[in-house]
Length: 591
Image (cartoon, rainbow, N blue to C red):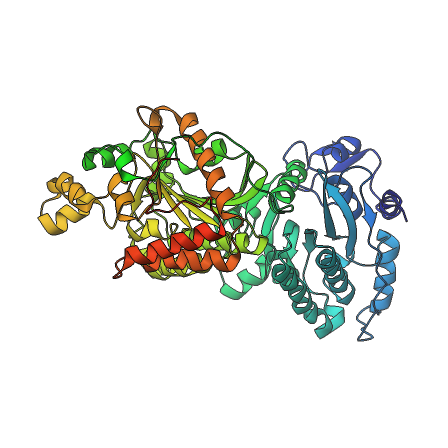
């Protein structure tokens, strides 16, 4: 059946008043045609009403692009279940009332020109409960996406598992999770759109296993319902518990969006999350003398002055660079464990024709923003968020760009309780083996292990007015000089400025900032970053995964090793043989 015809057939079953309806939240009387035009969002209070699956597909997909996915119906009523009415009768009633075979409707469609497979749940069908048929439909949609290597979008709405199917319903959680795992193995993007409500077995399986989780404003998500929780713990729950906004603050979803913005966001994700062919960054600006690779090409600097300039509140932050240097950026949030650290930002972006995963340590331009961002000091949740995004990059085959600007990892008691050392160590190990190109850029402060946790990269670069050190000058002075006022002397002794770091081989190149510094020319500094990233990724992209990882490991293996210069020269020779465009941290020159 033609896609539009399929949707219209099911929509005919959706009965509602022709003229007026009542908002269940604010009790406003709303004109139904206006309510429909507003995508079933109350124009008075913004409550997002439930949407039938056929209508949802029409809302998300480009006109005339929808084609149904017709799958054979699974066996009904595996237990012969009867409560006050036979289960088979309940199924017949639900099919008659909705025009659907079960609680999931599957289709193929385009969203802003990008093809996707959709599996959309419909709460009208027995509360969107997860039974054998619903689980089978989600699984077959995932298998279609796997076979055709195109993204899968799942829209959830469910009260939980279907009790009338007993343990068979329970098995759908494992079956659908297994289907999502196969898409992970194949590198196929998956996106979950959480609508109200999403509970129980759906929440604890495919709804929360996708690469990106987007929740509609006000949607509720959880394993146990609030009444069950209150009865179990014997106390009231906080306001907004299990709401989309609550989940965003606790790191469980990537974004909360009003219904009208879902389609453009999904379109961006489909553009950014799929690498097309062997694309490389387009020519985005001349490299010229922007990147210095010979320390003799840099003037001597007073180390303490460099530290002061690196900390200047006017310098571009990570988000400033990501929004200015990339053509498109979609921020993703949360560590999927329990928090979203504001000191680390990251998401999917586009540099020319190349999609990338970008991660940065975020400070601010004033005291209020600094406080909100924890002064750029990440908690364990921040490093786990970064690790999650890097694993996503590995799955999708996208290069990683990191922007480093932190005094160090947050040293609070709660950070230690949550495993700060473990989180940093896990990132170091993960980055060493990540099978995609990584370019790290120190844009301000590069403080200790908190900076290193984002800097185990194929190419490590630094802005000319930035620094990178094992400890802050103040900390070093307090410990070794027994006097914090000796910070300028400590800064000089630590050799933390760009010129010394380049000579030591700790960084591979220095980005020359605009005259008077990046703080006085954000756009100019971003243009230089864009040009250098383009050149570096163009050089790294042709390397095989094995060569990327072995070269990265060799880079860090040689620090402090006997014969390190010889090892480095061997590495440079190997790189030159495989890709003549790669520059060595030991080779002179300006490019």
